[in-house]
Image (cartoon, rainbow, N blue to C red; front, side):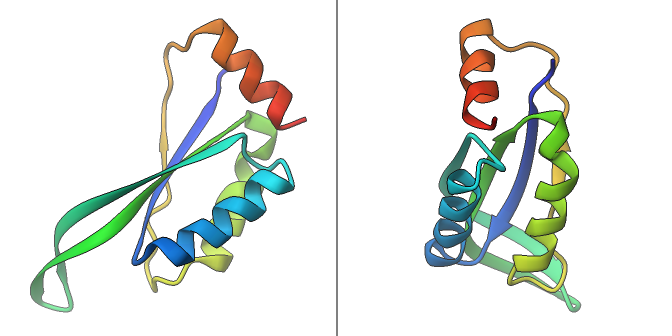
Length: 103
C-alpha cells in the first residue's frame, strides 16, 4: 500500500490546527505537519507576499477522497490548494504506523 500525502496552505495556525485535530481524532489522517511559510503569489491582479501555514496531511488510499472533500468544505480560502504528492518510497515501519493510525 502506498501512503497518500496531501498538501494545502492556510492563512493562520488557528484555522489549520482545528481541522488537523478533527482529522486525526476521526482517523481520516494519521498526522498533519504544520509549518509556517512565506508565500509570494499573484491574486486578483496583484503580487502578494504573505505568511501562511503549510499543512501536510498523511493518510491511506481509502481516505483520500474523503480527505480532499473535507479540506475543500472546511477551507477558509476561495481557491484552496489541494495537491497530492506521489510517494514512490517510504520506510515500512512508518507506513505501518500510518496504516494503524487510520484504521
